Image (cartoon, rainbow, N blue to C red; front, side):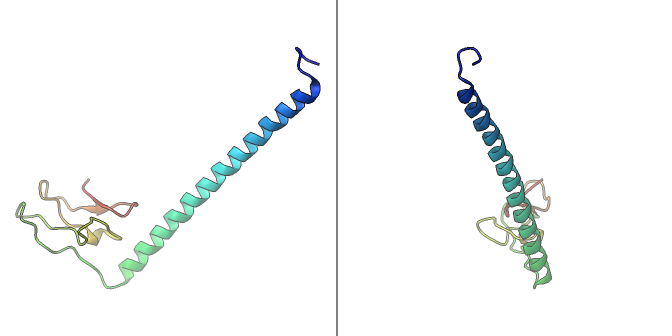
Length: 104
């Protein structure tokens, strides 16, 4: 008995702590695996889209002379070609890993 705690309770507490650490480590490995799989899936989808007939954002916007609207009205994309040109900076927009067009 240590400081009023029976040895059996101390062993149970230590075992529970070890189990919590094991479960946390397993969860972290699982999350890293899911992220890796998702990134690979997005990469493969982009490669398939690039190999298919190219889609291009070509509709002119009315905000400036260089403005080109995104291919999708919801600003979703698979490849950079789905994104248009920013009206303010005239910079080409890019497709993020989350599949939305953005301006850098």
